[in-house]
Image (tube, rainbow, N blue to C red; front, side, top):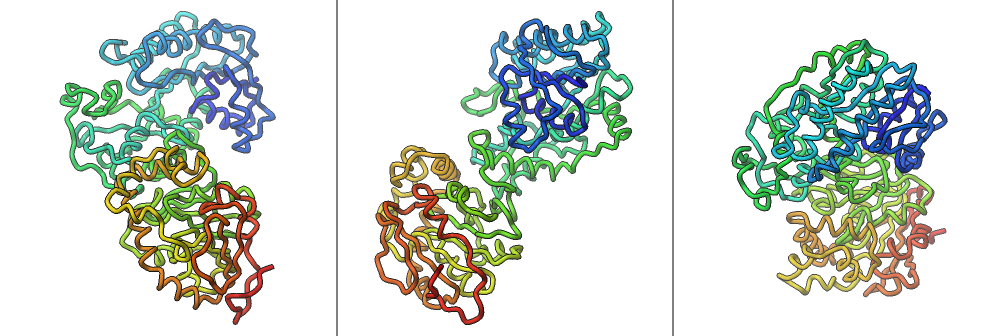
Length: 563
């Protein structure tokens, strides 16, 4: 085998395995439990060069295949660990890997992932916390033992590694920003938390064994902006307000955690220190490695954080991300269907239906709803901007309150879509009971758990309802939902007039338990047993009606019989 990767199921380890396999290497992945192979298959990675072996680094290692290069990406990266938990992986485990590597007759290099703030730091568990102190102790012990055994050791010292699957550290700060729980920034204007992307760091690690032997590499993006500017970049991308105030670190350390919300173990990472990156820059120049621009990397990672609900969910559709502060998912240019959600849901409402559709889809959170930022732009203008890059004639599918702006788009741009499907259109149904609860509606909606929201809507609990409940807890979200419900009700007559004017084929789909309150001169299908959200209760039946038609010819009327 060319390489052994310890910690191969972790955030860094699995990314390194992908990189080594892509370089054509034969890789042994050491794991406790094989969650790596399914993950690699989900990423469409060729695993023909992979061998998975079982190993527990907290115990002495034996019986593993002979390799040339050894990578130790294993460790516990978490705050609040006990000393025993932290030392088992970050000290004892690291030394066990080194002792095993020393037995390899053709070892070229042992690459150990340390940390950018732990080298030459005294492992003071009382003041640093278990995580940082154990990493510092592991760093010191690895260097001393490698010198005794003559093991060629290179220490890779990354800064805050960002990328898909990384939710702690800076990820926690972004989560608080997203949820409106970051009233002030820790530290002052000169604090820098340097970043490096997991893709770059994995490529860097893969180059170390073949490079001239160097003991230390500090791997970080020296163009990382100061923390206030970094947070401002992320806030602008998310469409949220960045905090303007800062809290001095000295004060943060003295205040109780229940007041600050800051984990004491994270505070030592907030500093204005700079690091000796010369050896890392030299390796990068020699091998042609280039870091992506910091702003671009931060925005891409922010998309991953929001798509994964900060570790609470898995994205169901890609690509995904914010486009002009609107959350979009799927095919932006050539979709077969464009899906607009109703209230109080978001675009995740369509996940069960998407599994039954034959073509690519584009789904988006309506402005000010779900994950999309609020805007002063009317929703029909927002929809025109969303559709601007589309080069196909998709079926436009609108649920509940989204029917109004969808109808207006269909009237104004009949050549842009193949048909219009209205699912449980709110303007043809009885007003939502939420509109009768006046001042209580917003606080009730904001406080709803996923279970209570599901019960209120008459739906089974599931990830789609959990996603909607998470969004409703964000500042202002519940109020915007109620405002959108009221607007949909007050605009009923205007929307009805649009329905009389539309010339593209229209189909209306309703659940038998959620009937229309007025007759319409358009094809209407009733889904037996369905309520207001057939996407979640009858996805296969609903999907059959959403496939686009052949593009209609000029003069097609609205009540064409659908095939």
